[in-house]
Length: 198
Image (cartoon, rainbow, N blue to C red; front, side, top):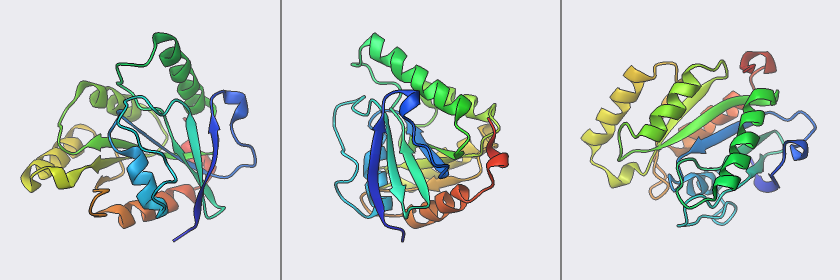
């Protein structure tokens, strides 16, 4: 298990880290459980701050894993209480990040395992399906849904969005699925840069 630590928060494209370490980005709706999952991947309870307020993450938050790659926590989408001005600024930062970041190796999109086919999730999955950068799906909060519901959700995602590399079923509460997810993230980070041009 690589050691992990918070590295920096980025609010402007010119503040993105230099040095060429590979990056794996995590994106998802607000309150989908990104911070809790990152803490579990890092085995550090308070590294990523969790909040019950949608839209709390307003920057790209960089976490350094084992001095070998960054895990990048991206602002949540779909929140209602953020100001219009800030929302535009964040989307511009994300847009430039995806368009220009040569160190990006893969994108993980987090989806609440209890809710199939939400419009915001469909939009991001459709967008990812049009990109060349590899991406994968992480179902969260699977401990809060029935197993047959999770299986139906997984089947739907694999059928509708078959460009996804994999679908991981996780729970930050029980820890299920987290080790296999971490292995995939580590493997993705070691890919050659040429494989991930957007």
